[in-house]
Amino acid sequence: MTTIDTSDVFLSHLKVSPTLKKDNFTVQLELQDLSPELEEVARTELRELPEIVKPAIDELRALLKEDEEMTCPHQNDAWLVRFLRPTKFYPESAYKLIKNYYAFKLKHNDIYKDLKPSNEQNVFDHNVLYVLPRRDHKGRRILVLELGKNWKHKKVCLDEVFKGAVLFLEAAMMEPSSQVAGAQVIFDMDGLSLQQAWQFTPTFAKRIVDWLQDSIPLRVKGIHVVNQPTIFNMVFALFKPLLREKLRNRIFFHSTDRDSLHKYLNPECLPEHYKGTLDVSLVTGPEWLSILKQYDSEYEAIGQYGYKTKPKK
Image 1: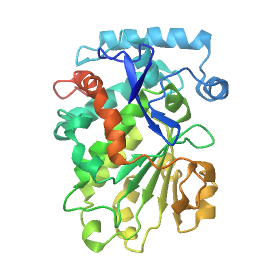
Image 2: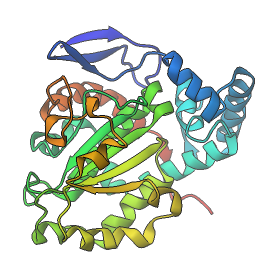
Image 3: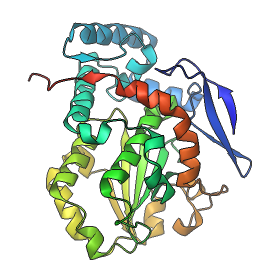
């Protein structure tokens, strides 16, 4: 492990960001400023212009200061921008997103209580979810969840998988590049069994959809289902009625058709088993954990804020 200096994006005492070397490739949370390409995306897609950004930050901060029901780090500009970017710097929309974000956490306190990487070693050890080392051609992070034959559902429950996904997305929220470019998700359902399919309940489906549609400040640009057997239709039937058009239009079913997958994710960012040409070995769950657990204090700081009681309508 080595470390690099970072800007003041942290809510905790952290001053450095851990890194891991993999095949001469540095794995880390990317906290540096936007590339020129993503600066242009921010300008054209997110209205990130000097004359808009400063007033939006000030107005959002004022809205949060007036809200007596929740606590949040409104003094931290970088934190405010995490919510302004996905809402295109409309302060009222960012304020609503923050309220949804904290209301969801309170509603699912059993999931979020003491949630930090070092408390979730089991899901990382079983390697059912991980982030690919290279971003896609538009700068998006790619999260992979293997919920078929590689998922030992009696050893790793779906709540643990959900917690792992939350930890990864909270980490991505810290990255300026991910705030602007967003993320892609691959669900690899190869070998999904009937026993595994029964683990998916209507309650779990509603939690996932509520989270993705209303409660995370990250632009999920595509959800790609690959290697799905026929039984997956039973699982997806739980989710489909809950999906609004925007998210429904970002779900793509590829089965074993890699050409179909490559229309959305370029081969250079994909491993060989997706007929990709990725030039770096996959970063395993345990390796990601070795990085993320060094952010424990940051996750603890994030968890200090929010609603303490159910907010008024």
